[in-house]
Structure formats: C-alpha cells, structure tokens
Length: 454
Image 1 (cartoon, rainbow, N blue to C red):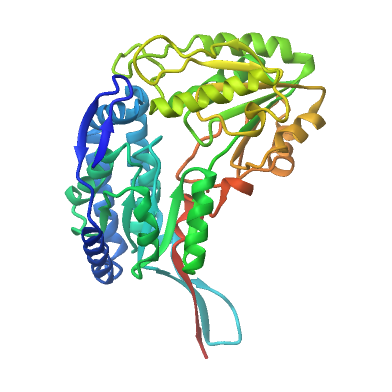
Image 2: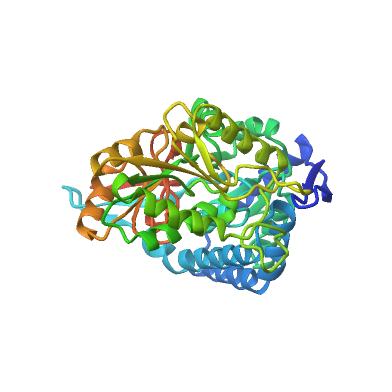
C-alpha cells in the first residue's frame, strides 16, 4: 500500500493499492499502443486538449492546493501559485509546440535537406514530492504536445496528487492511456526502465537517485534527463541593495519550507557589508510565520516528513559540532508534526554539511568573504551546479558574473532563481544534465532526424 500521511498531524489521510507487476505491464503496453495513434494527431488538436487541462487546473486550484497541504504540507497560497504555474506551462506549449518543432531547412548539395523532430514514444517520468504538480506538468506539457506518451512514477508520499494528475488529463479529453500514473514503489522502477516500450526517462530528484537511474538507462541505451540536487550560492556584493538582497534571499530560502532544489542555500557576503546584511537577513527570516498550512496566517508549512526534518536537523547539529554558529532557529519545536523553524548558520566552513551538502529545508548558510574574487571561488566550490544568483547595483558586472564566472545552469542577477516555461531549466556537475522547459526542453525526447533528398 502507498500511504498519504499528513505532515502536520502524522495521521494517514488515505491509502492506495499498489499496482501489481502484471498491472504495470498492462498499463505500459496500453500507453505504448495509444502512442501510435497519438503521434499522428495534429498540434491543433493536442493544443486544444492542453488548453482544456489548463482550464481544469485553474477551476480546481483551491482543492488541489488543499491536497498538497494534506500530503506534503505546502501552505495554501504557494499551492494555488503552483497550480497557476502548471496552467501557464500547459498554455505555453499549446501555443508554441508546433513552431518549436518545425522542420529546419539546411542548405547542402541535396535538392532538399532538413531536420525533422519526431516523437520517441512512451517516456517514463520519476518525480519528487516537493512540487507535486509543477514537476509533473513541466514534463508532461511538452512531452505530450510533442506527440509522446507518458507514464508517471510519482513520489510515494504524494499518491493522491499522482492520481489526480492522471484524472485531469483524462477530464481534459486526452485519450485514456496517453498519460498514466503507476502506483509503485522504488524497487519496481528498474523493471519499468528496462521495459521495451519505455524509450527514455526524466527524473527530478536527489543526486544518488540520478546516478542510479542514469546507470540503468545507460545500460539499456535509453536517453535520460536528470534534474538533481543543488546548493545554490547567492553572492551579496558590497555594492548591492542590501534591503532588496535580504528580502529576496529570505524569500528564496523559505519558499516551500526550503524544500527546493533551486532554493537559495549558501549566502556569500563581502565582509564590508556582512554585518549589515546579516542583520537585515535575520530580520526577514525571523518574520516568517511557520505553522499549519491550513492557517491563512502561515507563510511556511511543515517539512514533508518527520524523517526529512530529522535528517536536516542532524546536518545542522553536525555543522555546529564542527564550529558553525546558530544565530536563528536550529531547534525542533515542541509540537506535533514535521516542523522546523527558519534557521541561520554562520561561520560555515568547508568540511561541514552546511558547506558541502544540500540542506533541503529552511536553513541558510551565511559565509563571509573578503572580496568579489573570493566570493566567486566559494560559490563554485561545490559539487552542485543547478542555480546561482548575484546581488549588485552594477548590472553590467552582475551580468558578467552570472554569464561567465558562476558554474550553474541558471544564474540570476538581483533575484532568486526560479523556473519559467520560456527559459531552459537544468544543471551541470552533480546537479544533472539535459534541460526542461522552453524550446530546448521539448526537443529532449525527440528523434532529431536528418532527411536528405538528392
């Protein structure tokens, strides 16, 4: 059984029967069978269905936000915003998929030669719990619009979200088996990847999970796109607007209770403005109201599970034992649920979890550096490379640092890192490879086919 457990009360919300091996086989074969029809449908037809999905999402945003609050603790306002973003990505690809995948004429000695983009078939998506709708829709919208079909293995603690997503596509008018959810645990993933009908894999998750999936997919010679962990550095330079930086950095750190791969995590501050920034940043972090996600006054809910909260607290404790100092939070509150307060650590050094590892929760590591050169070095002193940001009033300098100096897949100036359907999204180093979203994302699961007519 898969259990949906409320992280506020630790009570079981609902249980779901897992699919048997035979059931999984039947679903995948059904999705593969419909692909041969789906790939021949027009962009106009697919686009209308995707527009329908966007309308359904918006009409149900209140109840879907409630479901996220129940299953993983997201506050209502963030849940509604997530559903709105899902509707946006549906509309974006409904409007742009056809132009993104147009044939590209290339001049050669042939009478005609060009690149044609053709769908691969059925794609497996392995998705996490932290943005249980957005992570799926940012994969599904381009994948389905491109003429592929999809099966979803969602995180085991959000089975309700998984089933509702399947229902939304069905209600929107998509054929029965164009998109299906597999109610399975992690042990069955290997068999699914090896299934002959699965042509590629998209994973959003941890770096260890990415390595495992990459090894399995590689052994089967199947393409994969991996969006993995991150320890995003934010550079606060001495010429930055410190009030803007403090507000933006706190928002970026506390979004989704800090449970985001592209969440702001390491704050690298030039020593000339360190004390002032830390004062402002502490005020902003302390102003957050963490509590029941069903409470309209809560700006931050619990973490998704108590074991995840306890693991984060262990990382904080290990860092403190190695010399880090807690200047805000850092204690598990005396209340039921997977709650953890906004926390700030300073005197963070290499060799500490707060420096070397991803802290997947509302904990900020603040690091003092002497100048811009050292700030860039510290920012890149990580195995991760998902996102990064720089705060400065010199936009030309900020743009140069973002484009040239920072080693990450998405670099922002004077704002926190966020995904956008119009922009490619993904990382380098142990944060993964491949891209989602934009024109680049829709081409990941296509046969880039050369056609040559003599």
